[in-house]
Image (cartoon, rainbow, N blue to C red; front, side):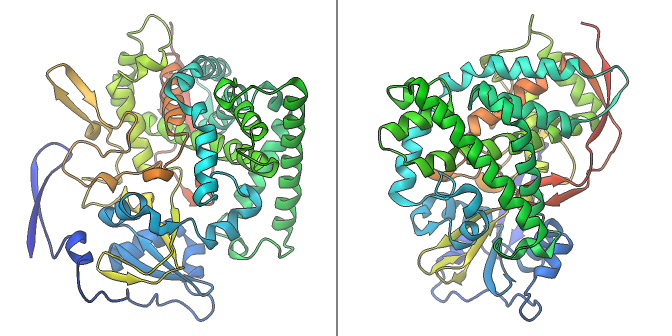
Length: 488
């Protein structure tokens, strides 16, 4: 037995005995396979996942440890919740893993050969072609749109009204994305995007056994999904044609928005036309869905903590006007509020990888070609790393310094204050394939939260959120808060 010492979230020392570290286990000369999944014939563990995927992941990790096997219709899968093993997959040995067949089979029609699913040299070329759209100075330039649309959202609220902040956040995130990344013209396709997002959510709702079936099976949900996705792709093709007719930028770095960046990259041969559309769909769906969820959960969580909400409000009302991107980077309470919401309610509950060769993780031997599931949902709620893990405690991100109070995790995926593994917190993934839009999303969440809290006090209506696993971590119903207008 070895003993490790780590600080609690309040800074006090606490000791925990563990049999071995993940690193020592991985050095074992005789790694073994994880225990069998104990599922049903043919179905595997599908019935348990469909009943409650998030609860299944938590229970499986608690019963089986940091590397736990499960099966889906005979597909051999491994749930990875050991932070050191996660770091090896995403960072240290990332070249031994690909996204794999399972994500491609599930998401290939949706995302095609865009950045999310591309591999090898094609992935590197695409990321290089579009990374200029996410440089800090370019992201800072989107700040005005982020603030302006948040002002508009607050203006639609009436004093004392009960609002669904998920509905508000979804409309807000789409408007920001339309203006700052895809151009104003995409506004006319709002209904097409809304219908596609609705069908994507339905298609990947893990409570439905049909969501585990191939999309070519002509279920009503699959037919709607394909029809609406075709309409979305056609709309984007029209937008691309208009950009080309108007004359694209000379190079990706000179474009005004992401769509312009993609068109310029295609004109230079860095992307083909299919990849251009694939990436536009990727950013249109992932860009507004995940941001909308993050904002929904941040606002709801702050509504349940009126004391900390007031702490954030004092911080952001100290400015003469709505804060700028640079200003919110220096708001520790605001940053902590967002960080903690992303810990407790990570919009992406699972990331997937597939080893290209046999690997050893957590002392177990995994064969090549299996599905490896990395779950922020489980790791972020693990009591080994987080005291009182199912409680919203943004204070855990704050600590004092000679220059005043600061918050960790500004533009990095690092953990909160305390001695815990880096990958005990990874809402945006990690390593070379971390979310390219991480800086954009974090800025958007902070600017929107700051702008709204300068105008309204939020009161919780529903204390506990009911969540479900689809392509993202989604609320099972409205996310309701009561808004109280503040006198400026």
